[in-house]
Image (cartoon, rainbow, N blue to C red; front, side, top):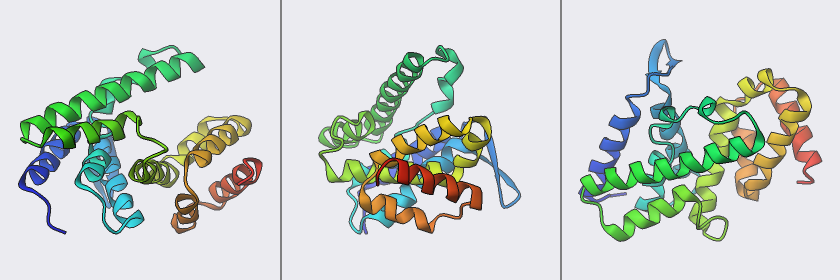
Length: 199
């Protein structure tokens, strides 16, 4: 599919920003910026989940966690209200960073507003593409971060988090979990969470 010049420029700028992430993940023996990898994985899942994604959806997939390392979790209280405050601060920060980046790429204003709606989730769950982005984000979470949370949390907390995540997903998104390369322990935990969530 052919995209506009402004889209291509925006993707390059977003990737350059996420490539500044000091956190690294080793892939095929090479250290790569964590946020860059995460955004690219979400982007690829979006492409798998729909045959004709809009430019705004793809830009949101690539930018919805822009420079996340700039606002660490430990800058907010380790409480449930603190967690929600942190997530709100992140969403606003990502939306602002995306807007600045897209404007520098001369992306159309209406497109920028749509990207921000995806990032801020103001159009979720009523918008089909917003649901696709949520599914993609959840699938990458399961694919890359589930093992860490399973190791760090007790079983009850892990199940609560997984049930909440699964409930945010569409039936189509949940059906794609079977494609993930998960360990037996991870698969067991997801199966239990799915059953407890009544899905």
